[in-house]
Image (spheres, rainbow, N blue to C red):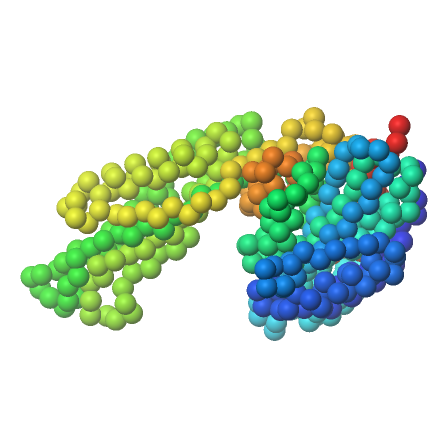
Length: 391
């Protein structure tokens, strides 16, 4: 049976976390880590730090073991945050944890310190009921997620003796759906070549790499990608950057660089994306001398993934959400890639989104609705009891 939710305690921990700056790649990691460690110590939950080779903290891990073997489920959330951006655009300071009209404001409140506060309380509660559990519940709080390195998760899962949980719940915000997968991605940097010349010359005009690059960018942008109706999200190809010239006004540029981001589906993976982009580039290059061929540098990404609807983790969370919210919460696939893609590449299924109601992620005035804390807590509690309760 689920019990009362100590929302005030969750809000207190969330407030303390938001007030500690922990911007990925900017702020020191130890202070926000120590904030959570202190809380766990006060609640008699043993934790361990995961550190880099030079001793820099990367993550915090705690484990609650029930009776017997049983399944292993892990709760994951990030302690580092996006940057503040222009602080003058915030209604309340990014570290204020100010509460107004039922919303708590602050950087990281939604992504994902609310999940950290909820998951920490779940871990402490389950630590008091180990005799009623079969299996293992772990929590992992990453301090190196917003840098794109996922250093905490990698330190845990890449260890030689790392366990492979039966499933991972990632506490990204959003209470209106359960995210069971995400598109993958592949990236590329293209160098389009031209022939330099003086921009004022009348006879020797060269070959303008900026114009070539613009034409190639348009061809890439206009291409039609195959549809995968069973996945729930289409593949997507985006030109994310064009750079040419040296900043002067008197030279015809002989080099133009394009950045490409390609979002993948199970039916349109990295190999298919490479072949398509290479074909478009070949068709474009056919109009020019072979010595001016465009070069492509591939930047590896992650494949798309989707946890089956029938997976015990997905079905348990969906049933729990229905029982708690009295409505059907759909299973969905996310457009952006996330740590769930990395876990899928290791064979670890992950749900990458059910959490508090949030607005302003990575923008000014990031905030979470306080009223959404208790139903999210109870939903996870119900699901975990289903998955780990002794029969």
